[in-house]
Length: 447
Image 1: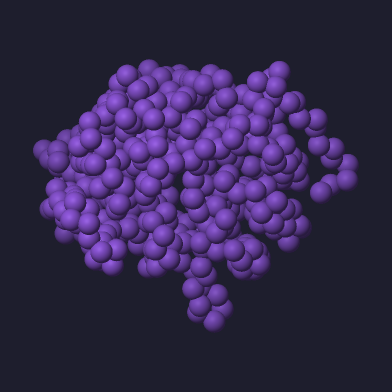
Image 2 (image 1 turned 90 degrees about the vertical axis):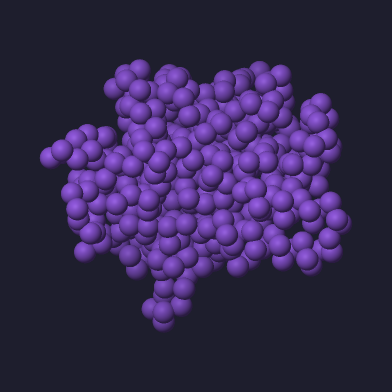
């Protein structure tokens, strides 16, 4: 750390209002202990048991008490965001697991059936395991590291491969089901540092998961503090992907090492790194509590920039008014809208996916109701195998109705910002369902 840079005094949370709060978490085995669920019919609770046997479930008391409107359940968007619903499994998958549960199947038989269902849910979309994993000089795969885009490396610290609560639509659900063959993680900070040292083209490190903010600050520091050494001057930005502001803002308030965490971020910032908290928000209600607003204030006091992203998903936020209010609220709090994603082709996609044309219409209508500061939100964006593909619009060219597309980011940097066209398909929900326009057999990047 630069000896001439003094850390600022952190302002304590207002009037002790956010003193240490116990973190009470519930998983599948605790469903019957969640008091508000008792008001729901037994059949509905059984459906939740079935779905959570396949897809991960985790929620905490803050979400239950502060974010969910139990008078609106099951339609409440935060309930849909965190609690399993029957439609999240295909009918034949649901019936298979439900019959086994009703029949008291042996654990081995249940595990086999669950593994079969999970394998059919595309657990690692867009070539994550095949195309994104770098190797060392000897050709050995580097666990816990992904390098898809030239400038950006993703790192998955093993201590951060869970979350304060799980999103039901999560495209990284396979990280949380206890199957080591599906998990991406590493505890080797030395391997990460060696890789970054040997790749001077990398300017951005994204620490992701799971959620790195579930980690103790001392563990997070072992990965991040070495980046202040001069040999890593080429690394300009440290990004941290997190849902903690939404699901557990007390991580930045009354947690035992909350002040240590904020000082770590401040040291990185003052040491010359641009620190960006990549905050996941899906609905404006997540930004309404006193705790999240105080956490935002404390984080911004460190100099950290908070960028906000999230997918457009049915049952939660497939409404332009929701996105308009979300982006306007973010701007008013000093946050930067960053991405509107299309729901990934994995997990419970059939429950959450929205046709691409509808996603574009929602984005277009929403962005019309925000100022220029809110129009930093890019989208709708699909993180597909070749790159991040943005839907720029629907139009007619030479008598053919088409989607206008471009790469925001790509495996090959030469593809970035090149417009291209796909035949209009009102039913398509993901990039691989689109076909080239104008009779072409391939898109330009497939040639």
